Length: 410
Image (tube, rainbow, N blue to C red; front, side, top):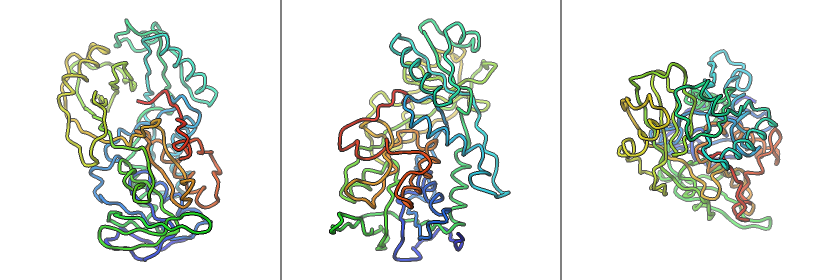
């Protein structure tokens, strides 16, 4: 299928679109590209993005990590496809000689258990991950000390580490190419903001019929995809729907250490709730604030006191070499936090069949975007998931108050 080249616009080129995607971050861009590249979808696709600089988008504040160390099969398989995708862009997005390599720096995640119950969770998770083909290894305190002698391990009973396809990748590269190739395939990107969504009831049930933007454009549509990140509940509400997704602050700190560790630091999840990893010549630490509550969608005020009060004490206690470190910079991002179960909501609303969700990723959106983009494109065009069944993420569980429990949320 060949589309005319279409670039970003200040006004829409049409008044009607087959698919309108609200939100042009990593998730919206993935869905648009997967949809546009399908030979069996010839419709017009519009992405509406309120912040063309992406300065405050979750995509821009991500730490670009990927892992298979989850406790649910669906999350493991979603990230395994993500790892395959980013490491072979030529296969999945090409052939195109312009596509760069996008390798994963596989330092792995290091989960530490300081209680028998925590150790049992690691054992159960590792068994499931192994059945799914992940390379997670359980490490005793002695084995961990031999491999990574810089940890203080007096309180640790067991650790799990996956050194294969788990770590950091250039998320910005993936984002750039989805946007570029999407535009080349005919995806139109409108710099505007949705202010209302229209719906009507008919003999076959309710449907969304269009929307109005802040600039005054009235657009009709065949379907809407909500890919608006931490603003997802606002978008859903315009369609008359409830969505338990709220913005929550997550803080990231880049620091230098006077005493180098001598080897790469895995992304280490401490019992304090702080995580820390290598970041090139420096190190990166992150955490949630202790008062982890919803914030305003535009509240990106830093919390510098948490460095002295929470982060530095935690990482210095776990890694004594980090007693002497220097903070380089810090920033605040938002998780699109699903308060039911910290898992994604993907697919149509059961009573509004042409309104689709791609929301509530709770910090996992970047690594889950390839599988979710592919899956939603399949669902929209064929009526069913073809490659990987994403129905565990369906909206119905919110109605049923049936959490998809994930024990490995960071």
